[in-house]
Length: 306
Length: 310
Image (cartoon, rainbow over all chains, first blue to last red; front, side, top):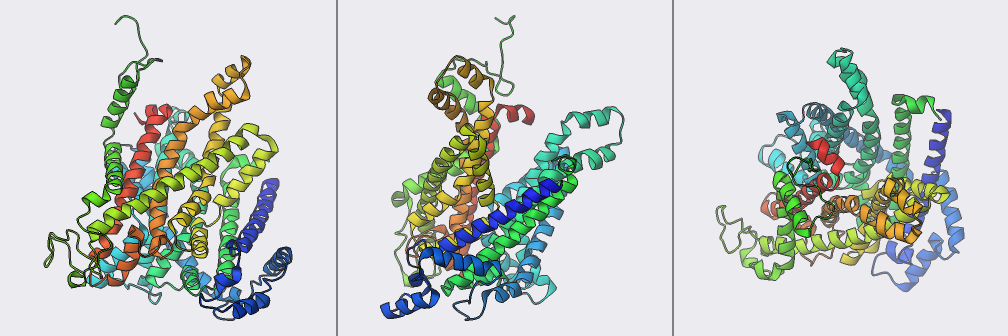
């Protein structure tokens, strides 16, 4: 178990080094970061001055070393737009995004797992059809479009829910649901197929044949084994949600990191974008590490094995 | 004949014959398709998408770029004030929504097809090499694939699109490259499975060359799983391309695409909701079609699943 966690920890650190390289080279892929970050109508002199100020005229390897050393202590430089350090600005936005993604995940899990369980244990039933329908819709409905449709009905026509901002408790309902929808679809499909597969396993048949109560079979055998793939997918889906929040936060003017990145793209504030991209990756990698931990707790093969 | 028990396929009721003719195979797939109504619906939606992309100039009632400010924000034909000249209404500049949706299918399909071709090309090559050679190289490649797949994918797609600028080629390249790890992972897994199989073992034992094993045994068996993945990934690319367009980061604003239409129509959500409604439905049906086809293919191409399903 300790060896397992240690190797996961090393992997996480390596991933973050990889992300750092990606974020560094990302803004240099067009060849000239200065013209990317400066307004299009900038003169040659101002571009030259900007290059010197940002250190883009130094050798690439020096720039890279400098970037990594600063990033390691959480210093991503100043936002080009606000002229203030990028990290505090991101940290200020973090709770809103986590709230949104948390609510989205909660809605997804609460709907998807019971549906998948019932569908998987009674294939062909009405609940199974509903579950498969939700699974398909979650995968196919563009959620950024559904957000607009829902705003039109629930905010503009019915005046039931606020259409933007994060002022009241109800504000989170629409963006949370819309953000969680694709995840809901993925989780229904996964739970259903996991339950279907586990139901056919030998140990379940044995449990039935020795006369074990079917509630116990579900809670002890089927649920626990279905939890293993579910946990890892929930971890992956959380990372997906943090990316998808760019659309949803922009539409609902939700004051989180996704909205900030959309605004930063508009301002050509690429130092801020670099910082957000790296910071979001840190959050995702951290969550994946926690997922691995949970994995180890649920799966005895990992708990007792290497 | 009726006395001997010939191997009969459980689903189709057809004889399993090693030397099936092409016609036999087609009827066989036809029967499987007939049984799976959702697969048929998926194929139908997919054919509509292809048809409208190819024949756009002939079936679109108007020029998708033609502006007519006298007829701007006209509602769909069945609503009050609409006319059949503009069946799905017009946008803020008086451009015909239906024609723009028909032309928009070209962008979606182009991104989907070429994106998947690039991604599967790169991914297959990496997966084949990694899975076939194995050892340390395989460990390193697998770790790298897991690394890339654990990142917040959409965020990086959005940022890279913003850096590279709006063009069809850039969008195709972004999806083609960022999506290749999915194909590499599938290929690698399948190669490992096939390499351990009995027929590869027997091929090795009769002294078949490495090249013959790869081209005659591994590649043909890879095709099924890869086609299935390709269908799902194409659906995802159509979806994400529209998402990029919605943020104003996909093809240039002058090009009619579903994402661009959404991005433009968003500003008129209260006064002219149909500008957004129809391109959104188009994205949904295209994506739904590909997903249904993918589900169907997965069941058909994997005989193990076929039995379980029944």
